[in-house]
Image 1 (cartoon, rainbow, N blue to C red):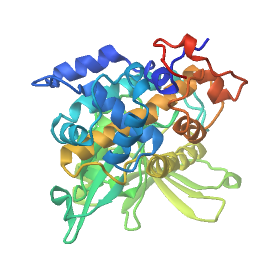
Image 2 (cartoon, one colour):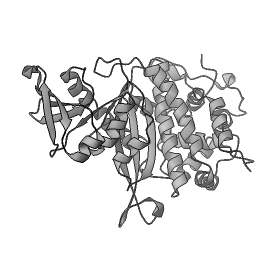
Image 3 (cartoon, one colour):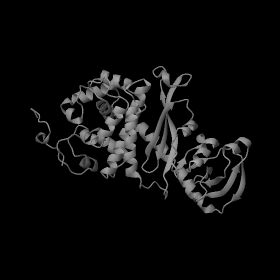
Image 4 (cartoon, rainbow, N blue to C red):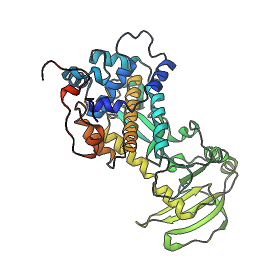
Length: 387
């Protein structure tokens, strides 16, 4: 039963406040703070993501317009764009990064049995990056080219549920392959990435960590075939070979055997895969690489439906704060979808929430389109003088 809580207040009930306070304490987020806490900053930025606010002024105007409801939504301080700008510039972005990682841990536990199109017992990850263009004159710290600024979101996506498990934000100049050095490799897991990550020394580090990788070979790939396995050409598999690398440096970087699979897809494109997994069927390897497109869809989705292309502040701290809170909102909606067993897309859920945050409607009924009745003010925690 709805007890007069707004939709936004019901949403934040899914957030672990105790874990957030631990993140704040870890980075001294309360130092010299008298009003407008880190929690209120997070709520303001989350509200901006959910309601598609364009600027700090938009956030201020919208929240002040419904000030009679703010206290029960978690806001105990006056909302001011100058205060919000200052906190985004100065409060450590790692508070929100760590909190987001906690939400990611919850979401992965909820989605760990979901099907992603391939029958597989191991965890499968897709690794890629997306570039967010910035104006160099406004973001001088994010130099990318001579007259262009940018940041990169390097993301490791769990294919079960499309949950981003690791997000590393760097300048645009950082090459994608360097991110392999930053990852904590999970033994037994499968890592899928494109040719931009083809570095045999780093791939051998994954192999020595008892994990697997799947990538595509470059056109100048030099190898020696040891033997070939039987194939079924009717399934699109052209060859399945066990190989070793040729060349002094290549053999030094990766001295073990590799598997080379040639595959003809439905569009008659010939794809050549390289992997250290010698046991999975060749068609499963091809299907796993096809699932890598989930991370491309993830990048497209968050760029279209979250505020990560236009920023409320110009400092590096403000940009990272906004990106991490946007990721937290994405993961929060995924958690709510699973816990309430909502059979709607994340896009549909976000669209419904964007126009309902101040309404006093039961969240489950709202998201399932069940018949509902807006509660009267007598059920509110705080009575209003005039109705």
